[in-house]
Image (cartoon, rainbow, N blue to C red; front, top):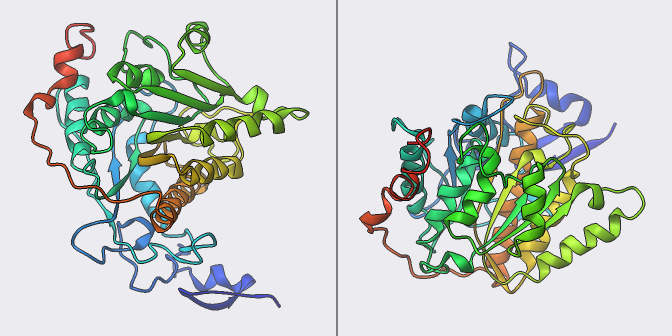
Length: 372
């Protein structure tokens, strides 16, 4: 009989572990954590200090999904699934949160009456965490969360009001560069395009394999955009060379970075419940390698990240567990970047500019009545 052990669970036979963690109704109980498991907290880990070092921010946003539904419930499902993710990280050599204080914010939901008003509401919420003394990881929610997160990053001290310094690194099946979808310019299918309109200076994409003609034309014409198509990186013969080129591109990034991870960038077999699963995507380990290389870049500082398009899979927890596992990897590599001096706390910047409160309504309200 083969035995396994961990620092936060009793030794158990592999064949017995699952049955020992089931209650009378057959539901799997969260693995034992020391200190005690905290319901509703990411990884089941409660805060160990009043001020967070890292914070997980759930955004229950779903207004423009165009195929499968359920992303509004995705963040909560991801947090619940995270209770089954192992705390031990081999790179760190210890359990998360590895001496830092990890907080989980309350789920954000908006009752604002229009799409643009909800984007402003979300941006104002996100600004609270773009202070430079905490690392925020946002859980979505549809990919329409990206433009307000980018706008909120304007307040980060490393951006200092100049979003042209900010590089977006996007893992996605879709280019998200449409001008609009079904008449809506803030559709989740337009997230990257609107993030550039908001002011982001550069966009690096990988996993792309579903896009419209106008998106293909923009990928070629806009020198701010560098796209690595899945057809190249996943090719059975020369894919390794294309993938190496993607990693080299990440090693050249300088300055502040926001990582946006749409889980449909993974192959659809890994995230079958996401709203628009697409075959032929990235492997789990390719996404992990992207995270590792990006956070290891000494010239770049990942100031924030999001994992989006999470939806609840009912027949299996695979989709939400995959999302939780990748979110955990992001946190672990942030910890490693802190430990090795690539991320340092900067003086917190107060969020007090009332002019930003209605940015989306003021800037885009007259351009599309469907949004306003």
